[in-house]
Image (cartoon, rainbow over all chains, first blue to last red):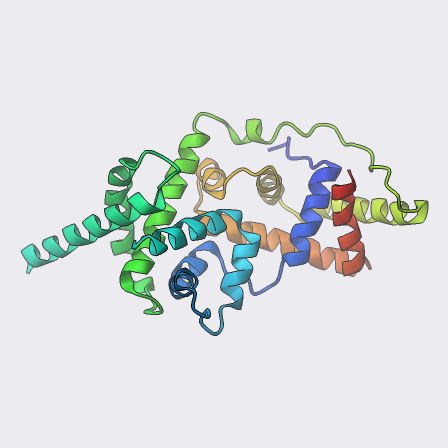
Amino acid sequence: MDRARLTDDHLRDLAGVLLQTRPDELTCDEWLDRVGGYAEAVAAGRPVPPGSELVEHHLDICPECREEFDALVAALRAGG
Amino acid sequence: MAARDGAAVAELRDRLCRGLVKVLAGRTDPSAAEDFAQEATLRVLDRLADFRGESRFLTWALAVATRVAFSELRKARYRDVSLDALTASGATVPEPAAGSDDVAARLDRTAAIDTLRRLIDTTLTDRQRAVIRAELDGVPQAVIADRLGTSRNALYKLGHDARMKLKHGLEAAGISADEVRAMRAGASNG
């Protein structure tokens, strides 16, 4: 853990993350329980449900949930 | 009653397995879906109370199953590698890159970076610093959580608390959003 010193490049990347940080972010679990309807809409090419802003914000800031979302939508389009 | 419940669980497991084959297409051997379907079914059953009814039940269940499968794949990729080893590569601190901007702008950016570094050193816990560092190095949250003996959700909260501390700290230090953007832009110049 004492090796966790950040380089200037890390700090510049962190600055980008901080610009997107907001107090009302969804956690990964909260996002997981809200993403279903949003994913169905995206997969079907329909407008996303009202109030999807926090779901979309989490997708922007969490690369792992983004990866899972992309796979889920692809599966839904394939008849999953 | 028990037989009916058992049949329903078996049907759920079968549907999740077929869904996972599609989720994992092009990522790993499709037979891995079989391996993940059982744990995914148990996770869905554990989380039934969390289903909000905002989608088809199977869509929600497949989202949960996708989380299970991807987390396992990420952990397998990093098996036998310690968190320290994953984050040990950045011992050197490079000089700010020389760009086309003027000296004053570069000095401002350097001051902002110094402020951010000071905030990290003085306001974050050791655990928060380690998490921020690992995330910036691209280590999956599932892997960090596994190493730290916590859940991905708790880890996200830990990281979010750290980011909010830094964001408020920058504001309190008089660093504007434009200066943070300029700090970020320095990365693409470097």
